[in-house]
Amino acid sequence: EVGFVPETSVGNVMFWVNRLVDLFFCSDMLLNFFLMYQDRNGKWVGRRKLIIRHYLRAWFSVDLLSILPFEIVGEIVNDPALQRAKILRTVRLLRLLKLLRILRASRIIDRWRHSVAISQRSIGMTSVFTSLTILVHWMACIFGLLAQMTGDDQRTWRDKFETDYFADLDTGVTNVDVYIGAAHWAGQTLTSIGYGDVVAVNTAERFVGCVMMLLAGVCWAALVGQICSLCTDQKKEDFRFNMDRLNACLRDHGIPKALQRMCRSFFFARNERTAESLRDVHKWMSPALSGELASATSQSWVDKVYFFRATCTEFVTSLQKAVVHQFFDSHEVFGHPYTLYI
Image (cartoon, rainbow, N blue to C red; front, side):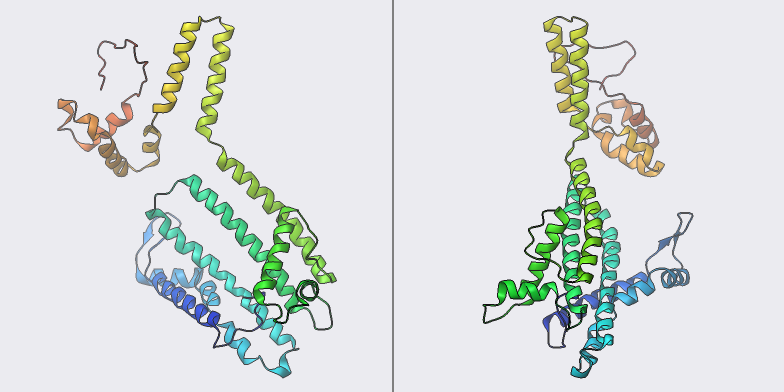
């Protein structure tokens, strides 16, 4: 909207969409006057006066700027006598403050994510592709904004784009066509493909293009690295590494083939049946939350031992931390005196 729609009139659909979004963010601003916050010591503050003071000093100014209706200001100065004046271009730049809504939205999503149990890998992949889409969109909008900010006496990439591809059309070019062309250029610049069908034609566009090439190259490398990291299963990599070490050890020591096969089958069975250990998880939690987790996860095998059934939560938590998980082969004989097996 900022980069490709010159004016947003009151009768335009986007004008009312913006007002609806502003209403949503206004309600969130009111909610922030009642939400508790954590101080520097990690304690939750619930006094209304301190909450209001904290919000006014922290995010209130940013939130207020993000909902100011600069479209109305643009409508006021949208006079034919002021079309070439710098004030109209300044108002268009002020519309970029809508990007502050991203900070608002990220804080709202941060409050919601604690209620959803989603795989961190899925969240990471979604974040990568969302960041990639937003990056291409922003680059396209900046490229489109350049064409609007350039004076009428200079030729822009949009002029060349319309002349090369839409000169023969009676209906003319639409904002959607121009946006797709700018997104096409942004995708080429980000991925270093460079077809050359959409190009910068003046000095300002070339300068901004050079800056975006440098920044986009760094962002592209970071996103590719994050994708590779997310696609790597650390558990599988550890299993492959341990299996290679096992095979090398068995080969170097001349272990008989039958025993080698038993060792490998044990490692494969352990890899398939190993559950995530809760012993490390208890270290990250508070004593009360650790006790509740121990009661929930250990109740099934605690009930199998009759003299554990009437014990307290603290005992079950200590027992959960003391239990050692061991794995045995299907035909292996195990058992030690004075040891309880469950």
